[in-house]
Image (cartoon, rainbow, N blue to C red; front, side, top):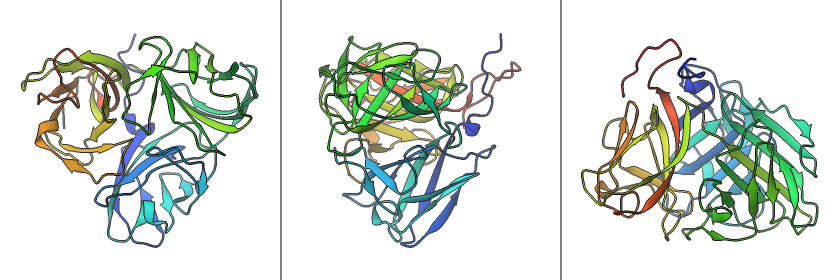
Length: 342
């Protein structure tokens, strides 16, 4: 069996950095493959108070959500078109402010083509990329606390994120390998805790325990794919020499959050940091400018990452950390050829 089924991660996930122009502009990806994005998450980098904006092709262009607060979906001229290898930005200040640098992370689902999924007891408008372990679904809650939602991945996701669209509400996050039904909130630094939210996650559905109101909702589900993505846990050692975490690929993008304590959803990438150590981090849960702190150092390696500081963000002694990583390229290709970092 081949080590990985995805030799070129850029066919499914890419990052773009750009400078806003306060008008409209087309952003083209620079990966080895063309990527028509279906899910775009982005942030201004040097403007304090900017939104962490989310657009996707299931909900449609100009329909923005923000991971740093609980507001409902709003119409904003952020992403105005999804193209064959990128997207077009409108003139909204949260995503295209003049002379402000910005970054977006983008994933492929199914090219914007949706289908109906009835694996659960509500009908989901679904697009799924089972090869890369990613799906987007929209649905209307059934008014009860036991709505089962089909995720379309063909195996249990490692993380599911849901959000109300037409009312304020939390970004519910469930990681089924962590403490049963404990749930976190993407817009908050709070520790995970027992809540209603997404109670169970299975091979075909998850339970929407937060669906007592009849409202429109969206989910994003991910599962780990060898050589391309990894969602898992490690324990910190409180040592400046840090902890090595094996992923099986060089990470292109890395998210870290200690779920048992109050702490940011902290993330870095190799598009903004092009050599080790990586220090430029942003937060899902805040509107802060990009930070560049040496006390948050991470080394991106050919087969994983290594923490390089004794810090609560990613390396307190004995603390458990959740990480989410997507590949720049696999450690070993499907033909058995090793790859190196950077």
